[in-house]
Picture 1 (spheres, one colour):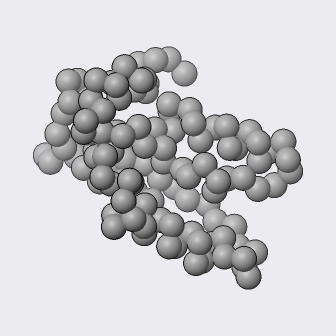
Picture 2 (tube, helix red, strand yellow):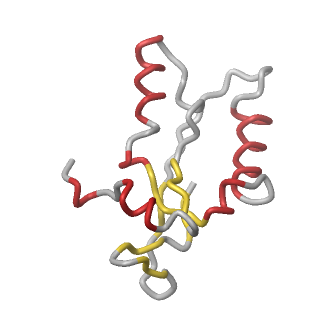
Length: 113
């Protein structure tokens, strides 16, 4: 995939006081299946194409998204007493009417998960 299709570390370094390089999928969530598949899925969570700029407090605090995500996954989908597997479709939702911009990067105002 060409560099024009994702944001690299240059953006995140320049805007680190406002945005995290937020991975859309928690590293441990796709770690299941055969060993080779689990290792590949784990590594794929760190690709820049799986990142989106998010306000630094959004995922760093359990008061916001991190807490909701952790609760749902650990008490439902991956709770020890269940054998559930889920598919999660996720990504930024862009809205030209409300989104802000950082340089030439549109910052999503909401996310689908």
